Image (cartoon, rainbow, N blue to C red; front, top):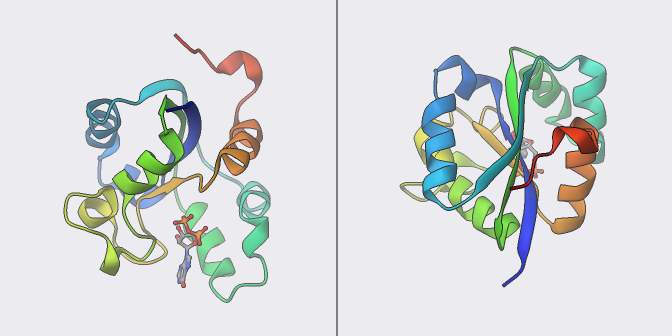
Length: 141
Ligand code: IDP
């Protein structure tokens, strides 16, 4: 199985409920290495750019408003089959459908405020990692 990198966001609602450490523990317990990390407060321009593929969707404005409502923590996770395994750890996008024990089941507050983001493919992971991290901010080990 391939070693992959995926991009993760701990969204503003999960940061606000002091769940950064708990979520990092879940990443590490699941066997991911956190190889880059930082906290930031997105501008509207940054959030709109990150979610550009959704700009025609009815939830886009609410999503951008939510993602700029407070600080987020972004990280790069590395591990075997990381993209899919991280999606499984997060649970379904709509937390009403998230399986028990997933991050969204435990930390989401709504469809929009669903606690975490994770890349959906190796290609989008590479693009999303590059959106937030310079090469010298990534520390594989
Ligand atoms: P993902 O985050 O699981 O990859 P996407 O379809 O890429 O899901 O949607 C991006 C984000 O937009 C979701 O995580 C969620 O916060 C929000 N979102 C997606 N669909 C809806 C919706 O139907 N209503 C409200 N928010 C949504």
